[in-house]
Length: 394
Image 1 (cartoon, one colour):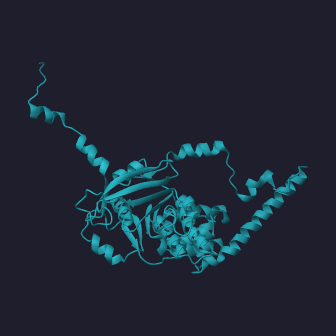
Image 2 (cartoon, helix red, strand yellow; image 1 turned 90 degrees about the horizontal axis):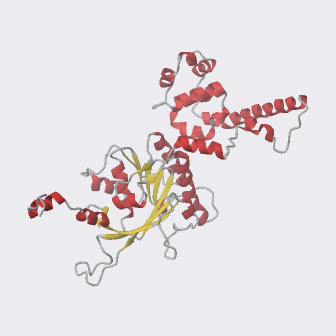
């Protein structure tokens, strides 16, 4: 059965994401497990690529011989239950052998929790603080993705930390999508990014960015269908395998949930909890634009619990027109100013609020403070030349 499953995976590689969820490595015998780990390293999964990646010893192994002669099956994921049962029976047999051995040695085993050999039978990984400290030292500081947007990098202490669900809220017409896309487009210059374009048509975006040099068009992967959270989850897993580390979902209200949930609160919360778990498991960043209700401007619409799932929550707010601003006196809010608020940041614990500049023509943001700072930088050599000052004493 194990050889049939692996051969089928090689012939039908599009099932890799569902396969990894349904059939963990621990279900397989050690020999097959090592070969599966080789498959996971392949850039493009196929029998030929798999064979080419194996050593001479592996090519002569009994496991490889069985895989080579196995007949692939398109519906091989149906083997999940019998494979799991086979694994459970082997574990059960192992427990029985350990119990028998303990009886012969006149040792009493605590049958309530089988604690004396739980790690041997269940594969559970119980780590002490010392173990976690060692892993922390090996891991190093969490990787960050700089946003390339001055005030945002300042608020985030250098950028978005991998493993974060980031929520972007605010009133309509504040530029929520524009700010998120500014980050995504800038990042596309260096790596692949994923954009779930649900709020407006894909053609609007293509038309607007057709002549843009702000993004690498090959690296911007855009999806504009499959709105259900389960479909989005599957697509994110697939794209992560292809090297995508940052995603934008625009927006919460376009994402459906056909799963279980007795009321709106549960269904809305499931969207955010699903995305938060994906971030933690895959070590990625997901930005999601969310809507708020009139009565609660700080929580995603329909779910107060959703706020706890996010690592970072940001908002864009309007700037009121001042009485002496004749140029903009008939406008509902300042067209070139926004207030950026970092409402929550689990990683740093910092809050942040600053008025920033918005360019309606280019739909881009920048910090006002940073422009002021640049203006204050003085070239002293230029001042000396202008005033004809030399280094001689008076």
